[in-house]
Image 1: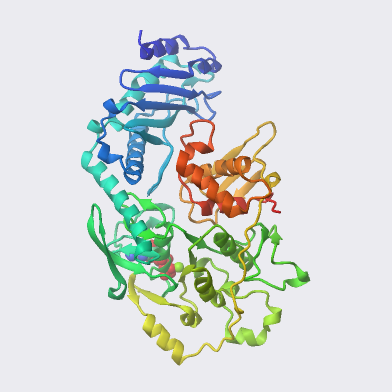
Image 2 (image 1 turned 90 degrees about the horizontal axis):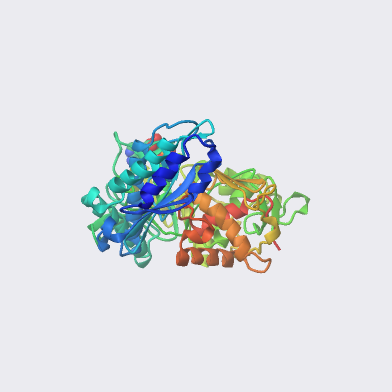
Length: 567
Ligand code: ADP
Ligand code: MG
């Protein structure tokens, strides 16, 4: 008897038995066209569903090697197959009893193409990781339903979602070529000395604040100002033209509601690739660009914020600044310093989410409140040093203060969602109407001091469980007994990134955090291990819910852990 028939008859035998008896089906089964691995069986129909994998051998899956030979193409194909699997599984899922009985699902994905652990290609073999709600009525096994799900529905999903012959070859080709071109553009940015690129005809606005798909009606396609226009020749799409943002300080100005924040958001998420049709496929940003914002209430542990904040009341040190409840300005200062500590090359700021007193201090305020009485050195006085001393560029949305004209290298004005290059005009105005500010930035930016985390402050355990992690959307992760609030870390775009980050914290603690290694070194090592061994290095079990994240967001999670302790 084949494994498939054996599994079927075992499931039929389990009919009406107590739910726990499902545990016995764990194992690997050879079906006609693929292997099915039942890795973890849920304890009851309401618990997190069971974890399964299928492995489809190359001679059955039949994907032409050109679709997965480069990492860009492989990641795109894996992404495409994840979406196919998800679609088919949703269609074939039905209610088959109590609780989650009958569901078949793969991790949800958004508009980004990210390396994930949902579908993995190994030399043409396709592995898919998904969950199944094993069916029951109350706590009694529904054996017949289970047999249908595992022995009929899953093979149907494999046949319709994971085999090349069943899929739209043109669409897959577009997927892999688009992703490859996006990666190419990102690698070309550095060579052409640019920090970001926004292709002509890009669609930046989204459907709504809670729907990340492109705005369909009345979206004004992006068109570069002629002065900033650059072109690239992509390996697949050929010549592509758009706006190149040079290094240094770039201001985005313009009236309210003219599209400033939308442009910046496009640039923020341009550190990731997007699916064909998203509108931002060729909005490409330096991969080390970090969004900065004010985040009052966050905790800060031992961060040297003295480049921005000094002489606090009660003589509190700002060279190793800690607080359980940061103000708008101190949180924004810490966010910048911590991004620099982690290796940020570009900072992205929006006045909408910045602390005013961190951004500006005009001539009149300088007269009223003496420098000695103001702990904050405003960002405007530090931006030029950031670039001249550390080579860190800034892109800043600033419709509210023309004082920034003095420090800008490039000024882009948005008018009715269309960008214009207005640098010369802004400089002329700055010349004509002097701000008469006294510069407050001192002779240099100041030190960026890498911190050395201690392992004790990182405790993922809760009760009897050595590791207890739970992710809520992209905003929060329960780490042992602590909630880490990441709602202000705006470049986490996918809950599966946060799942991987939580596991990476545990991994970093186990492997590298030892009260000796500085944080940048720890980040280097964790990211290098992921590059070499894949996201699976973060978990002892085959985890289907990981998506690639950046070192900056890993650091951000660690920095917001309220129990963090540093040497
Ligand atoms: P600002 O930051 O300048 O105040 P926003 O970027 O918040 O403006 O944009 C205001 C509104 O206009 C948003 O609802 C946004 O979705 C929409 N919008 C932005 N860019 C475009 C565009 N290119 N085409 C159509 N609508 C847009
Ligand atoms: Mg805005």
